[in-house]
Length: 155
Image (tube, rainbow, N blue to C red; front, side, top):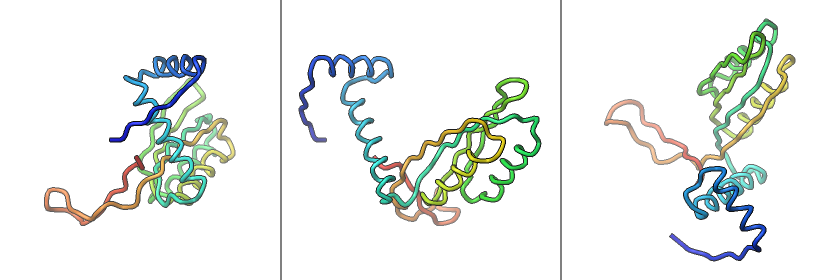
């Protein structure tokens, strides 16, 4: 583990301490590490250097509109290889929110995320992408099952 020292003016340091307290960080170091990870991940995605990612796509729609329901379900089934899971939440009598977890190559995940949010009838949407490191060494779990690898979030 490496250590480094930074200097902040009092106003910036006070603001950072309020952020730390508001988000429940145990220390300034934990908060700085999270900020660095977030910025490094964004940089990888912006530069096109990340090959794999996971994403959470959340969107709101009127579940009484059967056409939008069919579009949402159809898009998820059409890309079943990218969809890990989905959570359907009832917000009120008319509105539902879905959160869909996607995993796969960055271009394909990004495209599906944009497609889901842009579907006619989807009212609000947001995407959070996390870059993944390249596949880790191949192995089996418990000495059985298919040989496979895992991607992990970039630290």
